[in-house]
Length: 299
Image (cartoon, rainbow, N blue to C red; front, side, top):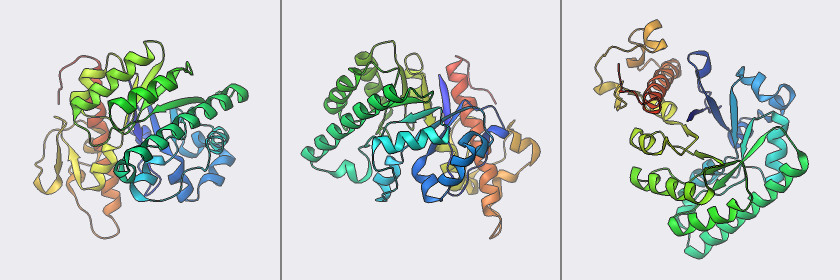
């Protein structure tokens, strides 16, 4: 199983890959657009822009739009794919519609209409990929708000016989529900295609899905760091005001002892947030990889 870290340009997350080995990163096109970076990145390519040679998965920004009511994602499936191709991404999630935020509150009929649009966008994306023959791989995102809708969407997208699928709208769900939905999708698409889970880093979930899920991504390290929280070697998140110093082998604690506990003065707080994000990413990846490798968690 591969573990992707979310990287945000607003404010810029630290370059995790310069501190530790990273399987890949997830970047939102919508956030790049919001920061007016698209034109600049197209000139150099996103790998050179970030100085990262690993896999880069571009997301449309549909999730951000759903929870903030912004309208930053590309206007069409082909616009998204064309931009992603120009940027030089390795992977791109098709223009999907997650059922979170405002979309989770819609009437049932409205949800089904959005789901059918999600399926249509996937078909358009599949035809574009076949015609373009780009090196970039499209990931077809299965969406839904319950088992019935997920099963319907999954069966429709499985007709594409694609190489890579993903499951979205998992934020805030109970671990058992995430596991159940992931199993349902794997049963429908079969053993052949790869399966990615968006926004999943719960260790209990990882233990249960590692045998049939190929990749996951997480923004937990960055979110916790910005909230002045640190991830303990045990995997537990705790605010720096309630934390006590503990032995840590992460590169930040080795180089800047005690820095992850510093709030910082006005103008320097982002610097310490950055260090916390790196520390958190190290501990998150260490815990997940220990589970993937079948090892017990160690300090």
